[in-house]
Length: 143
Image 1 (spheres, rainbow, N blue to C red):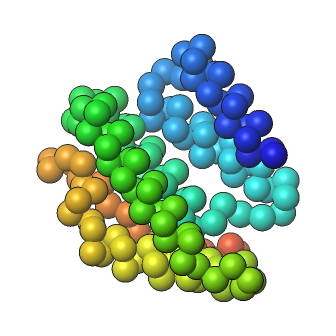
Image 2: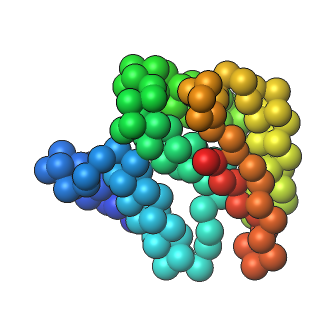
Image 3: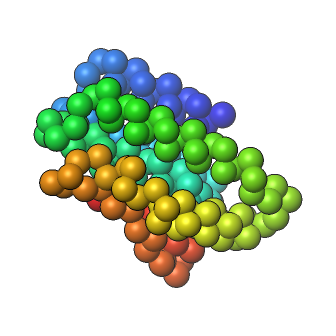
């Protein structure tokens, strides 16, 4: 519920052109989601981190004119669909730590196999890495 409300408020801010550019809008969405999860004493799961972080990196390249909007949307929605499909294969009854580990394992395999498809721009490619973090497991960061 909180995530839906957060997303609706973000959409309204975006429609009012509250953000200077696409990258700022995506960073705001990522931050707002993190705040919601923090209120629940949780963290954003690895696959959600991946799609949010990738969208920020993609938006920054679109803002600079390095990639067209249609191509950026195609890449984003392809990644989003692949991640949604992967979620259906993950263990549902497992603990969050086990699910996070399974997500990270899936992500590393997926990214290594599909990295070339998602680079977006040859001169300034997007790369996503898993960053170990002791307090919350690991993060996926795309730059």
